[in-house]
Length: 140
Image (cartoon, rainbow, N blue to C red; front, side, top):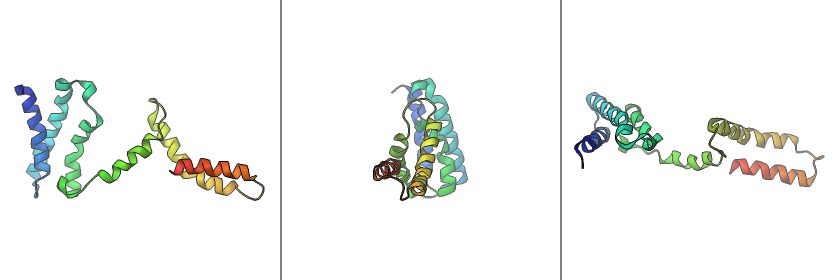
């Protein structure tokens, strides 16, 4: 392995190792933060900008998370992973993703109560069925 790539990798290992210790000192947090920041800043120079994903950026926040919750091994973020599929269903193109998600969340929150408010005796059975079907799509 070339020296520059090994040294770059060592920054990641050093940062993560310090954040997984059973007792993390302020010095550990400072060193981890410096190592991970340096790792992320050098990443595009070594691997290219297109390889610098959100996961690489998220490494810069790990130290703050450890300050709030303790060592990395004490908790899991997998509970949030299930939300990824929920969010992915809300996006139907590569432009204005934030607007698409905001609209879909608004619909998911507002549509069921709107449907319940407009369904009364005067609404036909077919219309009721359609409205309930539309509502259930947003709640899956």
